[in-house]
Length: 362
Image 1 (cartoon, one colour):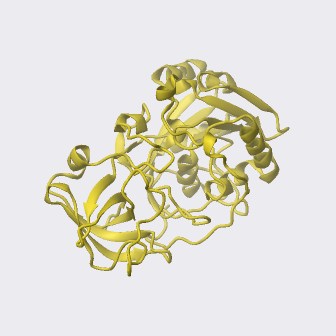
Image 2 (image 1 turned 45 degrees about the horizontal axis):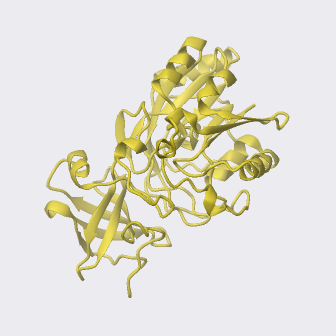
Image 3 (image 1 turned 30 degrees about the vertical axis):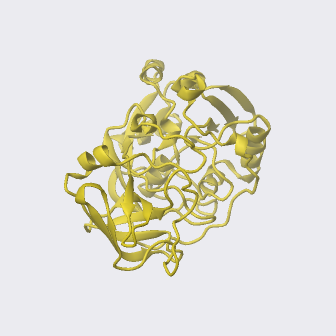
C-alpha cells in the first residue's frame, strides 16, 4: 500500500495547547548530563484508568509481558546538514530532508547554526530561495532549487550534484541537523539508535534512542518479540499545524506476520515512535490486519481516522503545535493526553530528541 508521491502538505489543528518552558528543552544528550542512554526518565501511562508510573527507561522491560511485540524503526540518521553558499556570497545551512525516487530531493534552507531557529530569509526571496538558484556545497558539490514544495516555501524540491557517493560525502562534509535548543555540536553517533541498519533519515527516530543491546536482550528473554520496519524521516521542523509530508517506508512481510499472530494470541503491539505508527497504519486494512508493503506514505493519523495496528506507543514529548499530538490523541484520547502532558510539565520531564520518554499502554 502506498500513496501518490509529492502531495503537498496541508494544515492540521493542534491537539492540545500548552506552553513549554525553555528549561524543559533538552539541550544536550543524556550522556553529557552524566546519564547512560537508558537512564532517561520514563513516564508510563495507562489509557484504561489514567494511572501514571514514573521510572527510568532501563526498567521498561518490567512494563511489557510475554507475547507482546515491540516494533522498531531501523532507519539510520544521516549527517544531513551541509554548509552552503549562495550566489551573493552569503552562508546558509542546507538540510537534505528526503531523497525522492525521481532523482530530486526535498531540502530546507536555514540560517547558519547555532541560530537555526527558522527558515533562512533574504530580501526578495521566497523564505530563503528562488527558482533556479544554485547553492555551492563543499568540495565542488552544488544544489539547484527547482520548485517550492507546499504553500509556505519552507521546503524546496532540488537537484543535488555531489562529487562522491551520498553517504561518503555526508560523512566527510555533513553534520547532524540541530536546532536552537541544542547549543553544542555533537557527533552523529549521538543521533543513532543502537539498532540502526539502513541510513536514510534526516533526523533521528528518537523514541528508540534509549534502547541498549542489554535491554533488547532482556525483552527477548522475557518472551517479548522485537521486530523491525523502516521509515526514513525528513526534517521535523514543521511550522505550527503543518502536516508531515510523504516519507519512504518498508514493512517486511515477516513483521506483518509476527504482529498478526501476536494479536491473534492476545499479545499487545507496542510501537517505538510515531514513525512506526505511521508505517504500520499505512499497511493495515480496516479489519486491523497488517500487510507487508513498501512505498511512500502521506498518511496523517488523526483522532477522526483512529488507529488500527498498535495497542501502545513509546514516544518522546512533543511540542504543542506538532502534528504528532494528533496521532497520540488518536491512540490515547484527548483527556488522557492532557493528563499525561500536565504531569510531564509538573514533573519537569525533558522534551526533544535528547529528552525523556512516554510509554502509553492500554
